Length: 345
Image (tube, rainbow, N blue to C red; front, side, top):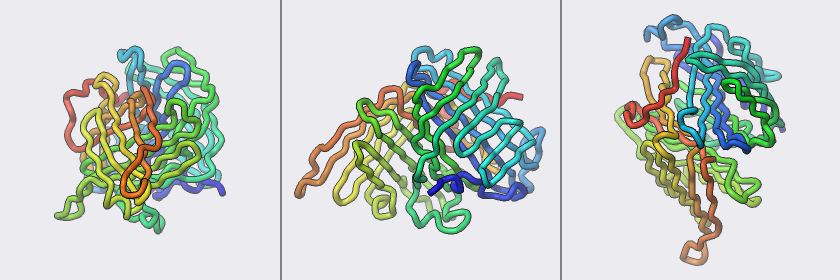
């Protein structure tokens, strides 16, 4: 069954108060560099004033970031806004200023702020979409949360080329993840993580989505949802019965969590140096600005336990060094993250 329909644009181009994001992250196996590519459509709330140069008109955005684990001075991120967005459902195509994202490819170029990036990437689509939330949340056309996300291509092998400031990288079995968000507003606090490159594991895949949500006068505790694959095992601790037991905390450059079912428990610690983070400004359709601290070269230690009688017995340890992708976000800019994702014109 094709997962292409899960990439299609959810909202009509003229619907205001919504945004969609298609994002990819990966590491180059040879250099260890981490990359973050985003295609965005956004239509501000009528009456919000919109953004300079565009007002409340719908717009597209292209985002790119490179994280260098060996030389932090080479880490940078740029994004740019464009008026021209064209989308097609079947086959899925999203085109912003001549740059294209399809279900099995992406090509384009982005320049500004002293940087020049060009990419031409291809991959074989993944056979199954990975849902991050409880299954019932995906009911209906738009889902049941102000922010919805899933991954039509959670683990794919890239081929093609990436040219960054004159340095050409040929993608040779780089493992990427490609996901799709459709939403009205960001959570008041969130954490996200993704990894497909654990040491000594050929089929590893980890996904985390965690958030604190405000609905009217009620603010939820931290809601934590986890998926983990390794050695042919699949663990989906992301249904409501798991969320009630899962626990997690996050701060800039650090995430700690415990997720469990009746038979499996997962403990994870994700960390990175401040110099490996980038501060990205996100803008909600109502004009609210939120901030995330993102890295594609973090590290992680994950321990899996299985139930043995009344006790938990360690089953497997997974480690990722400079291969864990994660971010934490909220309404406050953290001054300890000094490298910004820069808006260019």
